[in-house]
Length: 382
Image 1 (cartoon, rainbow, N blue to C red):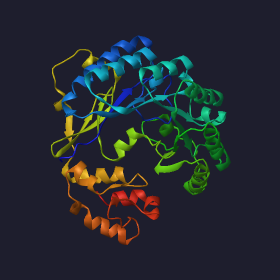
Image 2 (image 1 turned 180 degrees about the vertical axis):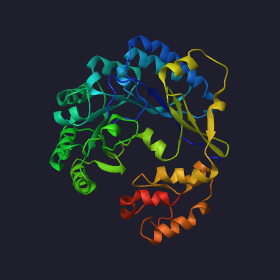
Image 3 (image 1 turned 90 degrees about the vertical axis):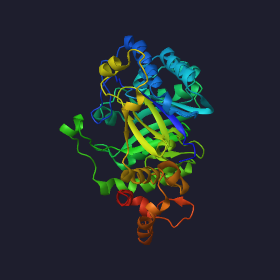
């Protein structure tokens, strides 16, 4: 792999004010502002362990995920970003995204994030309807969600994502589309619209709500697609929609099998070294993470890596790339996995004959039919 693979950085803030019943992310309650300086120091010590994986590259995007990163103060976010800049080079147009919960949104805090260098916000609205928010266990109201969007724009954020969920208990098509229309009324440039699913190790798994049947909600997709088209918003990934040029660069890097360092409790990373691709995962519980990285230590980052087996590398690449409506350039396969095109040639021919993969000499991309049956298409590569 001679071509330099793009590099990003993921930063995990693991605390939430309250754990949502549908959430299977690594998030924990009992946040206290007193933890901030300890965690900031641990994050930067963690980053030190991964500097050997940078390999002369600049970081093109940073993403603060959680948990609820917006629980952290502006000065704490500034200290993290200042520490990152002292250790790695960022591209001039580095995208820096921070996830925010409307329940912890404050105008002064948003302004301080902007001053620290955050240039994109992702607001976890989920719904503007009060009954749906209560059923989801959200700590905010519809009015607070609207206020958070207003505050984001007034604080200087021109790039904004809003998260919305559909297929909620008792939700109708009219209600789902109403959420979309409300979000679009603010002129946002990016929308994450995804179906509520019941995951293991969540409160909903133990006491599941009654959700609309698949055949009821499937027609919603085409209606929402037409509606968003009227606002100049198009679907570029399974659950991601944006204006042209406003796609999440950080998430595109994931889907195009780029590399990313990852710091924080439970954070997952991916790095390429020579002709091998590795995964990295940090310990999940915040207290254990703080114990591990409370002090600077000798460089042992390489010990945390786990190689992706050769047989799985192509499947993982295709699983990510085909989530994109436009797929990926064919030459990315070898550039980012070390595997030649011949490794998937027969599978592609079979899928193409069934009308599931486009016969495109330049790109690996599904047909419309293939995109509707994406799980089956991806399965063919494993």
